[in-house]
Every structure is written in C-alpha cells, then in structure tokens.
Length: 164
Image 1 (cartoon, rainbow, N blue to C red):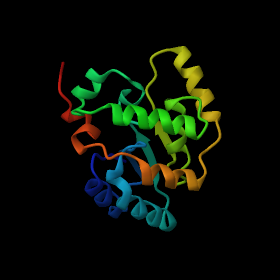
Image 2: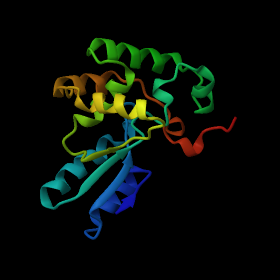
Image 3: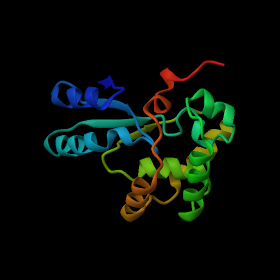
C-alpha cells in the first residue's frame, strides 16, 4: 500500500496493479480530488483496491473557531469556513461539525475506511456515536460540493502550515 498526498500521486498509484491499499487526505472542504475520484471508482470496478481517507477534520482545524489556528493554516479569512461548516451542520441536522465532516466521508461508497486520531476514551466513545449516525443522502453531498467555499491548497496541506 501507499500513502499519497496529491491527486497525481493517487492516479499513479491506481495505475500500479501491485498497489491494493491507498491512504489519501480527504475531507469536506478538499476540492482537489474531485477529478481523481472517478478514477478510483472505475478502478474499483476492475479490481479490489482499498481506499482509506485521512484528515477528515484537517488536524482539528474544521472544529476550531480559533482564528489564530486558521491563520497558521494560511487562511486569512477563517470566518467564511467556520460559518459554512456551522451552517451545513445545522442545515443537515447533524450533531455538530465533527458529525458533518465524518458523515460526509462515510457517505461515499468508494471510501473503505477513515483514519481518525483520538486523544481520550471520551473522544473514542463520541466517535463511535458519530460512526453510528445516518449517512448523508446523495443530494446532500451534491449540495455540499456545489456550495462549499474553496479553501486554498496550502491550507489543505498541513505540511505547508506556519509554525507558532
């Protein structure tokens, strides 16, 4: 298996028939993969390939209202994303932003697993509740993708974030 960082790496990995497990960063605001997803779906029709999505909360950024954290992630106007995530969670009757972000990933049949960090037993228990919540319907996924604000590529890649 491989862990990829970019859509180009993903496409190269899919073409390599020896690779059967791919881990990729993917989340509700990550538009970079839109074109590569079709390649995943087509390849999954031909052979067994497992896709794990990592960074569903972008290292906790999506659940933070701390503008300094967003600034360190190269975002100068975080309120756009903070408000949008809050609005979508309310609009689609999710428990909170975590539930929204996880249900978004869980709703794609091409994703076989989600890599999610936890810091406590309480967080683990809460995550189990999120994973038991209903999936999002296809029309909701479409609305999210059509309406989501475009986060810059360097904000979607934690290796490019500023250090405090």
